[in-house]
Image 1 (cartoon, helix red, strand yellow):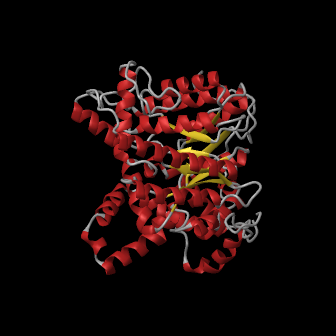
Image 2 (cartoon, one colour):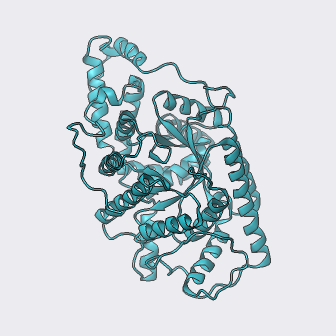
Image 3 (tube, helix red, strand yellow):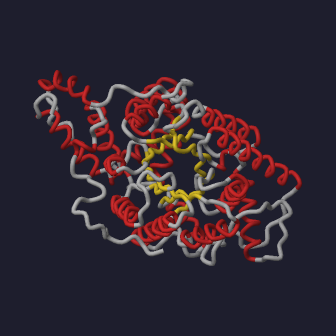
Length: 485
């Protein structure tokens, strides 16, 4: 662990070292004051790499020593898979129903994993985190930790939270908030999303099916898309379901209007394949209505672990080009592999997930290369959300080779808050736009969300070895170097 060299006689030095990180933080954005070739190995002729991950001093120049120590400890604990199992067991056990044990557990979580991976309990707390990251040269994606909604009342409450989050970014002429994250599952009951997805799938199978409620949208399926979720023709939406569908879309429209007024774009989260068609439908329909000029307002998420990912993305991009609609994508690998594989196995069909991690990596890199080439031609925007060092390096190199400006608004990189710090700082130091994905909300509300993410991304946290090693080296350097070095 990185703290083995920290002995009591270093405490005075430790206090001094904490002052090496910037202490002046821009005013809080919430205070109302200003403050398709695949990716291939580098072809640039420079002897220096685009992203330098070998100098811990430069990488962690904006991070205090206390923060480095806490991060090292937390990442070490989170790298052990039994911690995920234990955390899941505790959160689902009777201990949480006992007021005393609940308070003890919640406090322990709040001051360890929650503090490391979450931005704060509310907008004020998130604003302070945004300010610290902005002071270190990183932008942020605000994600209020909302779960799936089951009725219109909860959807309306969620709408208000999204509007508040967007409104909090209005005060600055240039906001450190790059995106606000929106979950369609928080705006439309999941059962209705499933019904709509079934009907969209059947319409793809049978083009004669008429969907009277359907708005203009972009392609949602490809020839390799999984359709096994809908084995028989579904019933049409009832009058009540159509009414609720319209209410859900109007909620999204209100969010889009608020986003337009605040000049902050939206990232629409992806979900499992059984409801993803409806999410794509919502997203693309709103994009057609609101995406204008060269800067898309609404970005859809493409999960590269799906076999049909590139086909669907290319089809949507080409259709948008024909319509004159600028389109933006967030590219991720995916978070629901276990659920998707279990469902496919239970139905005795082929999984929609790539057969190997190498295939997923290849798909991600091919999708990234396609969008980078589109951007170089003056069309499209992409957020490359990745913790994979190789993908980050390849994309950065290709962007430079294609002549894309590093500070281009059409190209951004992103990582989860508290993870892949070396990659984030390396990309920042290279001059690229980098954002950290910031979940925030009350501890009891957001911890189940984070535990689900940890379970779905089992094994992802143990890839933090590079971060932990570089943090250890930087801590040793600070604790053994003369003052001011």
